[in-house]
Image 1 (tube, rainbow, N blue to C red):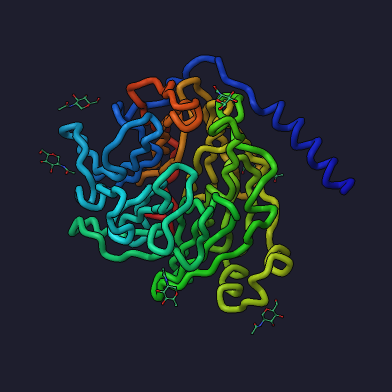
Image 2 (tube, rainbow, N blue to C red):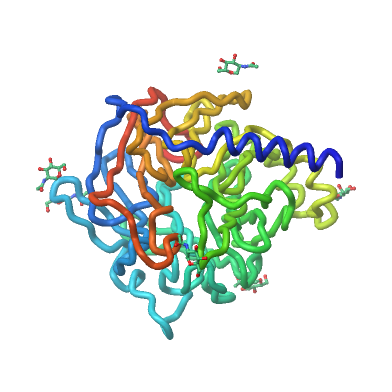
Length: 377
Ligand SMILES: *[C@@H]1O[C@H](CO)[C@@H](O)[C@H](O)[C@H]1NC(C)=O
Ligand SMILES: *[C@@H]1O[C@H](CO)[C@@H](O)[C@H](O)[C@H]1NC(C)=O
Ligand SMILES: *[C@@H]1O[C@H](CO)[C@@H](O)[C@H](O)[C@H]1NC(C)=O
Ligand SMILES: *[C@@H]1O[C@H](CO)[C@@H](O)[C@H](O)[C@H]1NC(C)=O
Ligand SMILES: *[C@@H]1O[C@H](CO)[C@@H](O)[C@H](O)[C@H]1NC(C)=O
Ligand SMILES: *[C@@H]1O[C@H](CO)[C@@H](O)[C@H](O)[C@H]1NC(C)=O
């Protein structure tokens, strides 16, 4: 109890010190890559120049959730087609995007799309076929496999994001909802196991915050539990954090032993493998480079933090335009893509009014290092 309260006081002091809006000058290393009418909270690119976006509807808009963006014509097309993007009450949740939270190209070159399966924001999910990971073959532009998460999710789940561990044939997903947790997926069999359910490392006492203000939904503070995750380039560690930090890590070996051993898949046992890694602030998104650096976007202070493999944090860039940078991406040229999604200004967090300022901007900065080979090409 004593230690716990010291920790709480320290965390409160830290949050007060860190939660400052940045009003300094713009940084001319930022390049505006896209200027959009739609809100995107995640981009993925291919080495041959294709570009996929997840569209967020926090501005009150309707329309597709996943689009391909054509940089020649500056147009977007519902991806992989209109039907997957046309969920409505009564349609089959197994064959439509119910509510997409994230997307990325995986190490196998396929596009993976994470569906929370909840028709209303922070509302109950449609079980068992709403929460799912959809795999799209981008050479045929067709859905090639759907992994249903219904055996590892609950009504209050919020399936958030995914990363891959090709050597072990696994994908790891975060559940940011209630209860919080990690989900380990066997990519060959489709079997899923839920881990670290409601564990202190997957949940947090503090709500998420943007531009120095705690997010509220219908007047209540918003808690986003296990959210961002990354796998180290050697595949040894999974890093993960609730959206308000801090970042923890666990060995992928421990997760994979627990996948087959239910007495190990127990918080008292598996929890012993969890280590604190970095004291991250309220975070919109992360990315990881081939050298094992984790990039973390600070939603309060409009900056990107670089976390070295030894856990040390330094500021990479700070600019007043980096408003709630969400899921980031490192392309094969060593550019870090940063969608300034302004999510905290959206309808769900502003009592029904959007204060998002358009056009939306997606920036890059040259970090001089490409992606991790086991993450994507
Ligand atoms: C973009 O549009 C142009 C003109 O229609 C087309 O030639 C090109 O193949 C498209 N690129 C992609 C990546 O779809
Ligand atoms: C597409 O957008 C870019 C950058 O905003 C601009 O330079 C280009 O002229 C646009 N092309 C078309 C066909 O609108
Ligand atoms: C849950 O697991 C059972 C047994 O393996 C399987 O038959 C069923 O299809 C799974 N349900 C979902 C939604 O994946
Ligand atoms: C939103 O409305 C709630 C009551 O429903 C109120 O407590 C809260 O202060 C309002 N927040 C904002 C940002 O207007
Ligand atoms: C399963 O995990 C428990 C707890 O760590 C351990 O004691 C036991 O040896 C493991 N069983 C196998 C078959 O590895
Ligand atoms: C951690 O790594 C960074 C970047 O390589 C280095 O500058 C720093 O000195 C290291 N810190 C410790 C405590 O080893």
